[in-house]
Length: 40
Image (cartoon, rainbow, N blue to C red; front, side, top):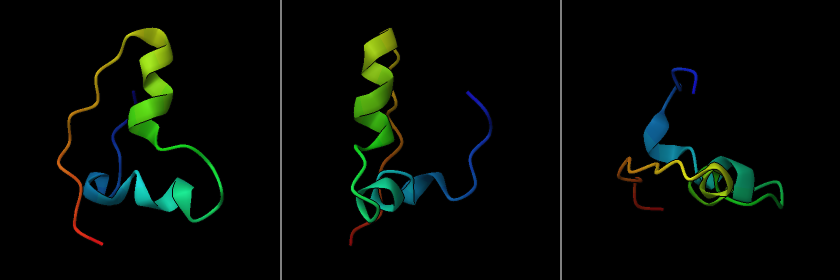
């Protein structure tokens, strides 16, 4: 995976566009994404 800008909000941004969170998307390849997400 590439370095992410603002990884603490990476799940929020796709949700704003009707997409699934990155943490769920990467599970397709058995990748665990365990970056604590910022509160909304």
